[in-house]
Length: 197
Image (cartoon, rainbow, N blue to C red; front, top):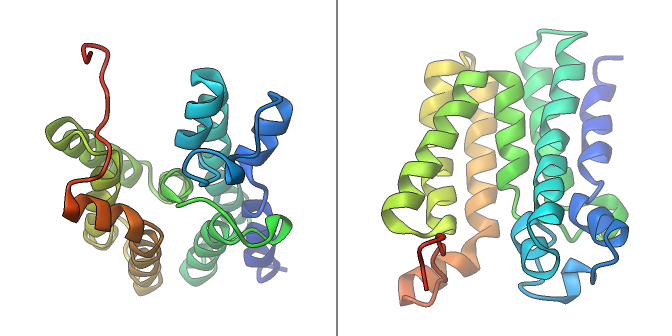
């Protein structure tokens, strides 16, 4: 029974919040407009703040819900780490949408919050500080991902969690390879705050 949770987590993670929200708000398919990424940032471009916020919440919950459900049944670190990883993989490579998913920042955050709220908070603070200093959302996500194994080592004791955090960080870097190239060449878009003109 417990070993079904990773499979169910992958299927739950495969529900693309961005595509569902786009249909609900009568917006273009996020895979065919803007950056082509089915995530909250691309929905923000085409549908505004409300649609983006709903997408973001959906992506976070895809990480939170499977882990919390599994935690209600078992405290086995290996199973919980697998559930977290499979929910994340479902978001990146969704079965229901041609294995073409988002970059995974929000779903990873949801996974870590469900495993340990302090780790989720540490990642948010890391993202915010980096974003405010650099004004690059992608760089903030990459820094948070790079530090996640260190946070996991401190806040999620057990080898399965440490290995999971390394795998999730590596996948997030892979999904952001285009952003990394643009950062390296100075072509990455910066965050625009309210005071910007």
